[in-house]
Image 1 (cartoon, chains in turn green, cyan):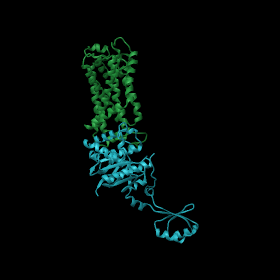
Image 2: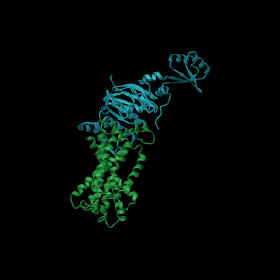
Image 3: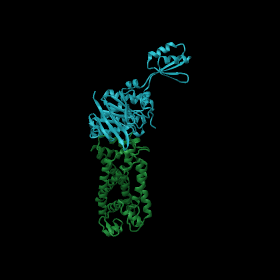
Image 4: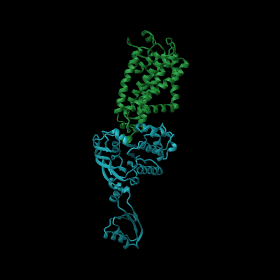
Length: 278
Length: 306
């Protein structure tokens, strides 16, 4: 238990110490709100700033938690992972510590944007909304830290990993409805969006932030909060269930994979495994 | 003396390639043991298997009586490891790195502060403890790693090339710490090194080449067995010297302007010298070095890794 707490604290400290990273992680979301808010100004969205912000917040949580993959790979490359692995700690504790740290950092980043958002357009009418928002952010954070950790255990080279990561996150964020409403996407991309977990996370989160929980299914579809797959309506509640299921699968997979991975095989620089572990 | 490390018929292969071939050796408690060998000889494979990172192919390896394959967790608590490459968290301070290590190794909370002070004093870093590791020099990082490797009071400390890439002054310091440790805490130290003169400080040496142990003894015994003192002589009368050397059965090689003579039998060499002392211009006796031992045994020069 103390190992989990120690690694969690380490993750938080690293986040707080990285001032530049923190500032940029705040600049980008508002840049997106501004740009996409201006481009997709449309009549059926009552509160475009809040609409965009909700998408941006959940995307930030998603990207930040997925970053666990990068930080885990960094730990392998810097050698710190080796220090942990020759110690008597159990790997499951290491996995849990890393997952919780990433989730916490991701949630904190989401909260920071949300707090700024409160000044520029987001309004809550009930006290349950912030609570639901928090639960949603933590869930999404956990889900994608799981995905991130899973990716990290499959990595063999630090350099290729960065490219793969960008190639995965970019489409997942842009074809999720967070920035660009799904109805504006061409058919092919829209079908890709249907298998993108972020689509469901976005729809669900947006419904909470915009406080549209009491709308009918038809109204939800009209507002782009429920997803209409050729007549089959995925309600926000179902979206949440989908996210939780994906999350459970990846949390189990990543923890299992982390316990089983032979980190001695990671290619640290350019030569063979013995160069890394010798 | 009882053996704290026991390796019996250890073999490690990767597919068809046999990295370590059926080696056996023991290390006595409280000694410094050096593992030498050219690159790719199997040193790192052995050290990594002993540290529970690699899985053996066959054989038995024990540390403090515990099997490194079946009792990983117990073995890990017993050993401290300093790898060749840094395994510190550069984003954290020295203090934070040590504290994390204490958590990983279940050091009782109330002892942590005392132990941090003890190990940092040992490596002269007590004043720097609040500094970020990323801002330290290579030598300082190595010292932090040695301090960290000791903080859970291991019985065996593994040092994989502890002084590679450090300047001579820092190297000398690191050795001071290592010897101080062995004396004060009776820790067994298992190290690999490329520096021959460092190997000579150790109690026992094993030389590994091509996956097998080709020599295993004290530095003194190895030197005695594998090196010969040599006399370098310059003379005015070369034919006379050659005649005497043949007569007294001394092996020699003629170089450009001097003779290189094996000085194993000092008596006979002295007799030759007394018989031609008027002709001799210059004489120099060279002791065998540990490098010679290594060359003699492996036929290769030990070189630093690129």
